[in-house]
Length: 102
Image 1: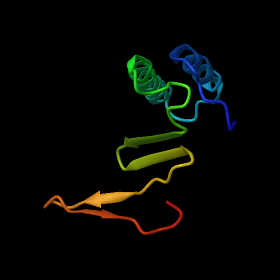
Image 2 (image 1 turned 135 degrees about the horizontal axis):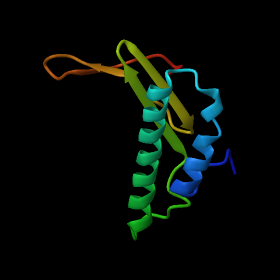
Image 3 (image 1 turned 90 degrees about the vertical axis):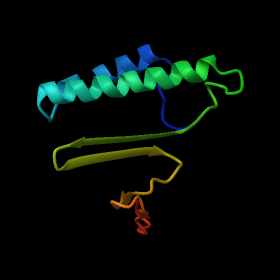
Image 4 (image 1 turned 45 degrees about the horizontal axis):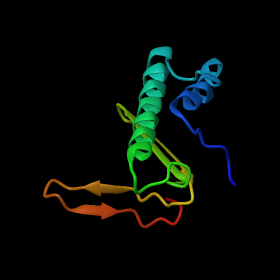
């Protein structure tokens, strides 16, 4: 089994609290990002837990996070699935990046 993935929303909160002392961004921004991420993890966990077709323990092994603040965009991808970065034009056409490192 790979790196540890939080099994419950409470465990996600505990793991998130471990990085509180390492805040590199403004405290307010960091706390907002952390709360948003933990809330999203909890919502996904709850949805998976309620589903009769999906097994919470075996439901996935990828986490993708994107935080955009002004001109700064931070992308984090952990797991065995690729991330494809793309752009959308005004007419709705979507173009993906062709880099093998994305």
